[in-house]
Length: 107
Image: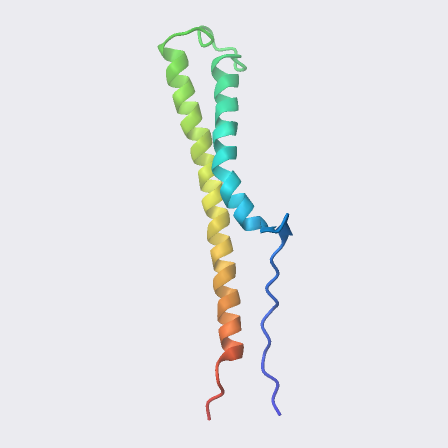
């Protein structure tokens, strides 16, 4: 008798009955918008960088707000895409391991 390799068990962590990866995928865009809005407000209205004239209602403030929002939201999206790519690689590896175990033996 030869022992066949067994795949690693697929563990799905749950939070309130929902897989964690689904929660992250759902909350990711919401967190991106909230964080981008907060950073935009801090930069344009509170003027945390102390740039003269940036805390007024003028074109500089609006352009800075738009660019800041797009940069922060874009960086957050890139981080999310990187996480999803890694998760998909893990799913493929688990599927290949499961297929290897269930494949009929050939003579």
